[in-house]
Length: 114
Length: 117
Image 1 (cartoon, helix red, strand yellow):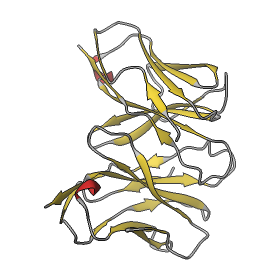
Image 2 (tube, each protein chain N blue to C red):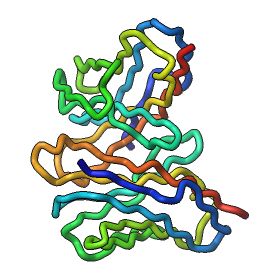
Image 3 (tube, chains in turn purple, cyan):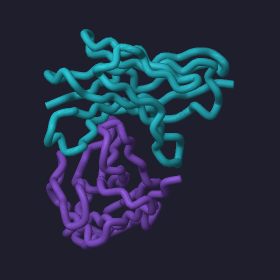
Image 4 (tube, rainbow over the protein chains, first blue to last red):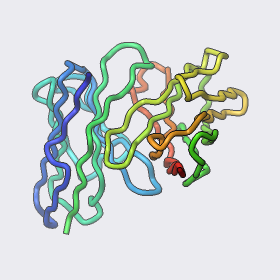
């Protein structure tokens, strides 16, 4: 079974802090994604990575950056956390190949910025 | 840009009965892929079913089936013989088949399904 893990289930940070959210997958997937999930808004793509050291902005990249130095790990960075970044963050990975290959999701990190 | 609309924020069904979740999408493309994902409470999101737009036959996976109406741009999910474990948030998602689509999924806002015993 594919396993996608995220470093924390719950995280509380202060405004202005630099925040790192870590995601690790164990199936050698090329593609990795970071989404933000908010009630009534569904999932919105923040960033994704085709492969190691490759990244591309999604729909809402402002205030975020990412890092992918190793294939199995994709980090989301909030350079200076703000209260409007309080949300559920979901990581996903996917094998490169047929377009119907599914995305496998992690359990999510619920981030609260105070 | 493509959009995905789930018009039912919440639905409920009695155990063992059938429920249909609606999804419509807007696209100018002729080739694309559609998905239904399930997110149980406090658990990871998983794929329920997928449909390729060039296939006329509706996809089925055990108790889950879709009604894909390409002309109407509609992709509803039918759950038969509903079980308590089906209670979850369900998301409809669209993926373009165009080159350079960046493997991106566009999600709807979700439908929260409650299953009553």
